[in-house]
Image (cartoon, rainbow, N blue to C red):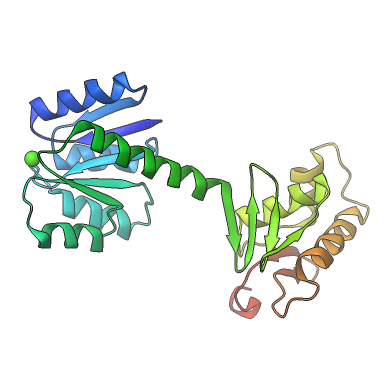
Length: 228
Ligand code: CA
């Protein structure tokens, strides 16, 4: 697990880096807002610890810009002031948690563990509408009802759910599910999609697996007309 620490106070930054590394985390530090933001954008971290008061760009501005760009990197804000408005604006801007300086290192570790656990769960649970797929246990559940899938059906559903709203051609699905050596000239892809559709959509009002005639298939819980 990689943690980014954006903190201009060298003493605090060194303390955090040493402490977190002793706990087995890989840590990189940035001493100002601009370089911290560049590192945060690199998509190589699992969590960022962001100080509020920073040179060049403050923690709130970094957080605001990251979230506006759609970055979901979990962020724990550090605030030196106990001012409630700081905490509230941080959370409003999309911080996942905060700590007020000075803090106990054990408290920080506990918060980090919680955020990272949440992060792993969100990565291994794919959802489209009321359909949930767990990519660890391979369990599919829709509206609270478990769906039994063969391993190929699971693989196919995972590909659909990793690409919600995206049109997948028969060749895409053949390549992803069966591998490159499969000949998509047969109708085996259509047969599997139909099997999968029965399991996923039968008995539900909203159909998730959609056909784009002559083009392929996609999954969505929104009106398909708005996507094609
Ligand atoms: Ca600072």
